[in-house]
Amino acid sequence: MIVDLSAPIQSSPPGAPAFQRNDVEYFDHAAGAAEVEELFGVPARLLRDGEGWTREVVTLGTHNSTHVDAPYHYNSRIAGAPAATIDELPLERFFGPGVVLDFTGRADGEAIDTADVQQALGTIGHTLSPGDIVLLHTGRDAYYGEDDYIHRGPGVTAAATRWMYEQGVRVMGIDAWGWDRPLRLQAAEALERDEPGIFWEAHQADLDYSQIERLVNLGRLPATGFTVACFPLRIVRASAAPARVVAIVDEP
Image (cartoon, rainbow, N blue to C red; front, side, top):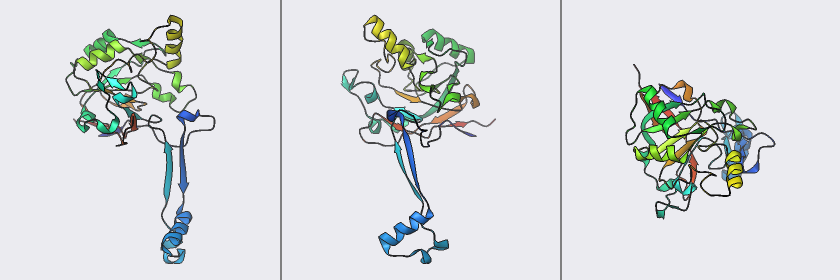
């Protein structure tokens, strides 16, 4: 069985902030027929049912849908070396055994720390191995497309992210707007304490790893026993890319 973990791509509703807007412009069969005549001189009467091709033009930010982050998104240098962009990462990273950890009981803004991840793994009886792709199920995909989606969900600490990285995990995902706690909460704390390492803490943990953000349908998956394919589009020098993320579930 294949479970689609990717959110649909469609035009954003009016009022969506500019940095998060997606737009899809549709050209129908009549427009295609006109293009055929313009480009090749073939009139519509020589086409089946007088119709030409259809096509679409998509304006889509690299972080605006279900997407995979590259280390370059977090900082220009990671572990003392230039950070990799999305087109520079090995494809092997994006195909591997999946693990779902249940954090649906966590409140918006709550931190998921190392002990929480370890406890969730103990609950399902799984020990992480290099190459595992760890997906955090928060249930916030129910709010995908809503105005307050950006402010919902728990978030993973830098310490928990680092611990999973130390177990050999190079891809981690979540069904919320971001991997970190909601940014307005982190921003308020960073400003109040006037110190770095609070805002965007897990992103800027100085680790060569990738995040999958804005997943959907994690509730349809078992805890283990499936494979994740999350190949990002090959966009040169990009900090992220949209991906069609799917889970291939082992049949009994």
